[in-house]
Length: 555
Image 1: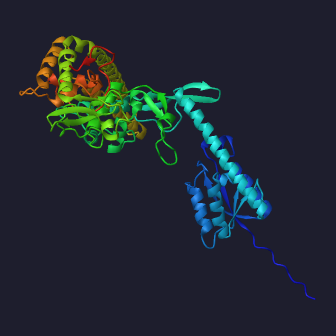
Image 2: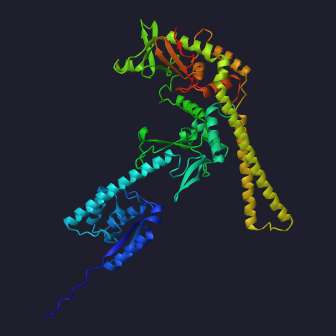
C-alpha cells in the first residue's frame, strides 16, 4: 500500500505590536527594543514568520486614538489580511478597556486574525476566552486606579505650586525649582519678552491705543498683526488666542489645574479645580476690569444689552436677600415704579422673601451717596492710594526692564563692534559663513531687544496723568455735573462708570460698590487723557473694600 505524504501546515505570518504609554516608561518599564526582542524570540520558537511590526512610542491603551494601532487594525481587516497573528507582550499592550478589547479582537477573529500574548498564553476554548476577558477587565480596572492615583499626585503637586508638565502659557517659562530624590520639581517663571505682549493686550483692552478707546478682541488681533508682533512660534495672532489670554486667570497669579476631562474636553465641576499659585503678570484689578469690559459688550451676558433700558440701575441693582437682580414693577397704571426681586417675581415667595422698593427713592439715594461720599476728594484720595501705589511700582518695574533690555542691546552691539574690528585687523575672514551667521544673529538680537524696549517705553507713556489732589477735585466736580442732565434726570452711563453694583439690603438700606480700576480710568478720562475712556461694566468688585459709611438709608 502506498504511503500518503503528509503536507506541512502553512507557516503562520505574524505582526508585532509594540507599545509604551510614555517616554518615561520606555526608559523604566518595558522598552520598545526589549518588547521587540522578546516577541521576535517567541515568533522564532513557534515557527512564525514576522512580516511587519507596528510601534506606538507614547500612547495610552485606554482608547483607540493610536496611529500605529489603527494602521494595524486596518491591515488586519483587509481581505485577505497580510498576517494571521498579532503578537503582543501582554494583553494590556493591546487595550486597557475591556469592551473595546473584545470589540477589536472579535472583529479581527472574524477576518481570521488572532491575538496572542507571549506572557499570557491562553487557549481558544471557552475557558481561555473567559480568562482573557477577566484579564482585560482587570487591566481596565488597574488603568483606572493608576489614573486616579496619578491625578491625585498631580493635584497635590499643583497645590504646592509645581508645574505638572505640558507647554506653559504664553508669558511664562518652566524652570527647575528643587530636587526631591531623583525627581526635579519645576515651576513657572515670567518670560519677560512674551509677558510684555500679554501686558500690551490688557492695556489695549482697558485703555486702547492713542485715541482708539478700549479695544475688543478683534481690534487687538489686528493691532498686533499690523505691527508684526508675533506669537512665540512666530505666527500671526488669532481671535481665539487673544480671547484665551484675556480671560485666563493664570495671568493674575492663579493658574487652574484639572479643569477639564482629558478625553472629552468637558468642563469639570469647580470643586475639582486646583488653583496653583504662579507669578502674576497682570494685577487682579486690571484683570477683573478687562473682564467687566468684555462682559459688558457681550449681548448674551446678563445685563449685556442694557443700553435700551429706561431703568437707571438696570442690571446692577441686586436683591440683598438672594443676591439676584431686581427688575421693574409698576403700580397704579404706571404712576409708580418699583425695583422688585426678579426671583420672587418669576417663581414666587418660595425662592426668595423678596424686596420691593420705590425706584425714584433708590435712584435718588444712590446718586446722593455718590455725590456726597464717593466724590468727596478726601475720600477719593484715600480710596485710590493703593491703585496709585501699584501704578507707580509698575512704572518703576517697567523702567528697570527697559534698562535691562537696553543693556542687552548695547552688549550685542559691542560684540558686533569687536567682530568688525577683527575683520578690519585681518584676524577674521569676512567671507566665513559662520562669521556671517554670527553677525546676522547679533544684529537680530540687538534689533529685537531694542524693539521690545521701545514697546515697553510706549506702554509707560500711555499711562496718562499723575494723580494730584487738584485733579481729584476737578474729577469730582466734573462727575457731579455729568451725573445729572439739565432736566434733573440722572445719567446712567456716568453712574455705571463709577459704580457697578447696588444691593438693596432692606427698604431703608442699600449698599453701593464698584471697581477701583474703572474709577481710575474714569478719573483719567475726566482729565482729558487720550488713552482713557468711560465704559459701562456689568458686574462687581470693590472700591467699597471695608464696611464703611456708604451703607446709607434710602430716605
